Amino acid sequence: VRHAWHGLTTVALQESGMLGFCQPVGHAPAPSNASLTSDFCVGLFLLAGSEVSKMAAPPVLLNLTTLLEIRARVASADPALAPAVAMLRAAVDAAMTPTPWTEGGGGPWSVLNKSTVGPSGDPHDYFSTARYCWPCNTECNATIEKITGNTCAEWTMGSDYHPRPCENKTGLPWLCHDGYANPINNNLDRGHWDSLYWTVPPLALSAFLTNNVTQAKRATMLVRTWFLANATRMNPNAKYAQAVPGLNNGTAGGIIDISDHHKMIDVLDAMTLIGASPDSAVAATWSLMDVASLRDWATAFGEWLKRSHASHSEGDATNNHGTWHDVLSIGLDVYVGSYQGAEAASKTCDDFLTKRIAVQVQPAGAEVKHGGPSAGALPREDGRTNSQLYHSQDADGLLILADLCSRLFPLGGVLHKRVACKSIKGGKYKWNSPCQTNASLTVGVRDIVSWAAQHADTTNTSIRWPFRQITSAHFPYYWAQVFRRAANMYSVPAYEALVQRLPYTSGVSPRYVLDLTQPYRT
Image (cartoon, rainbow, N blue to C red; front, side, top):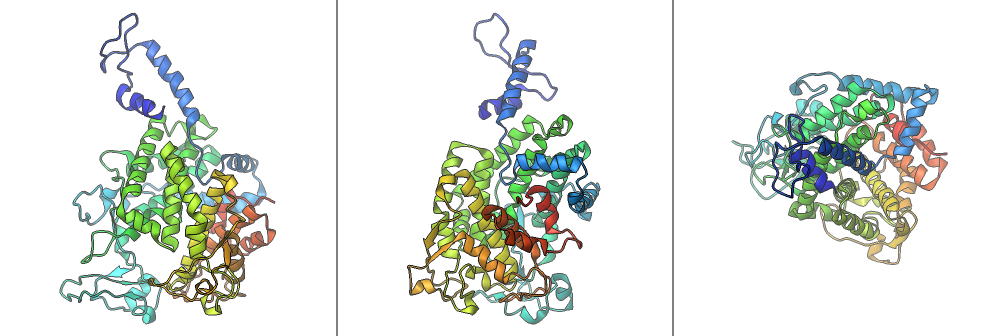
């Protein structure tokens, strides 16, 4: 049905608005053309459209019923939501500023805006450099300390050395220093994609909650520019993401540019939200043709993801990279809604406990320096220079996967099942797992939350994070999502109490989005 509707909206429906290829009344079947039209065909087209609109998939990560309840509370000026609404309004005010892409603000952004075209020579191909890599002749100094927020003390310790000697003349090949983000990506597609991600979801959320057509129009314009308009659209692949100049044209790990923190899924959900608005004027800003076109783009990207060798490598990663790859893969499958996608999502969920939880979660009995003695640490993140950031991100992604799989396949029981842990030897980050000597030890999803509740530094006071964290800032953003999601998944008020301890006054609080999209269910 979707393929037929796509044909009607892209072939039969002309740019002028005329509906062509209509068989004249009373004629025998014969070839038609774009100039043949009739009022009865227009009526049938509108009837078909009204039925196709009912097929619009629900959001992947959001719950429409919950959002409709929040919408009613916002309309009645519920004082409990006042801080969250004020913070959303501030985010939207910034997103509505129509500034050129080079100045940030509200965009619009496009892959054509990057300062350097990638190795393919096609400006429509997404291109970024590895986030923590720099020319090999770079020496850490006060400027780099200011840019990255880190001292130079860890510059060498965070290096990822390779056998190629450094060419001082060219700075090739680049060398990576974990935790020290190179600002070059601000002017490549990574920076512009991140800007789109931080702009579109709040615009769509505000438009849905407050019936604001202007905000909806801006969100849809931004998405059309990045994904749909022929002149500015991104090709549906990430072949050239996180390239390391002098070594490669792109890396498997570059897919995290798109998958990290469910960025792509949030943007897709944002458009679904606008199309599902009870306000007809807001919903009309995202047409059925837009729905079909974005679904086609997501289908093409998902197909690239399934056949790409880089994607397969990323899916095999046993840290946050593999976790976010699975979130992106399932999210695209759910959004597209194809039979093949349903099969792929089922396979990912079938493997979730044995491929992710059994491998990435530390069982009870480990040494304290490896996250013990209680179960739930994520040792593949503990060797990072900013381990708390990556630990909380991986925990967030694993809980999202558990939540998605429990909703899609409720008989799987992933939230409460335990599986035998698996020990992985070798790799860049090594740890001593009790699994190496006792394969009967088990782990489960809830272990992640229990461990985090004991160790996460959410208040800067009472708990000290046990691993290396070179950036002075603390990272409550992902912990807020972990504990709110866990509080609802397991009905544990103590987890919500941890969310309530997080700051709500400075900057963009992690709680405002949660309170407006995933409120705590008492």
